[in-house]
Image (tube, rainbow, N blue to C red):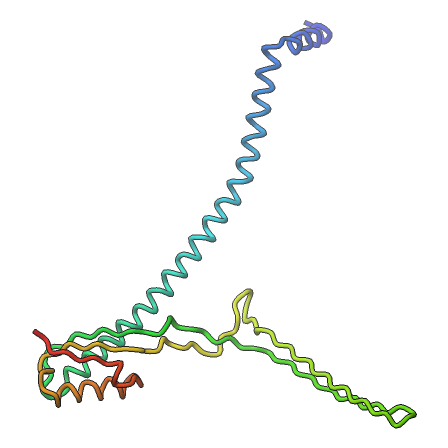
Length: 192
């Protein structure tokens, strides 16, 4: 077979509709594979980003929950050490979750302009420019000055020995003093 015969056979084969359909299907499949692999890479990045955000949210929730549990446990220990108090159960209500205070760069400018015209007219113009922006630490994270823990807004205590009014008063005073909660927000009940 020489070159011309080979060329003629290939051209003849390409004119066959069945072969053209197979080639078209193969080209469409390759194109679809390329497009899907392109979108799949972005999908993997999105899934990874969402997973990271969910992990951060769970970690923050656990941190807040740990803080609240630690406060309850410390209060239980303190109340158990009061004379006449036995076993204690505590429930605390918190105002909100913790909040972070960012560093803010503030730029304030003030200018006063006084103008007098030829007819003894006087005009005073005051101009104040205030600009503030959050200071960024690294990347997209703001620089945090401090973190405010959640404030206790109410406490319920169930304690052995709370039948006695002196014990009830001592428990209320301890809770009020520790968490700066008014005594009307503290409920003390005797344990069964």
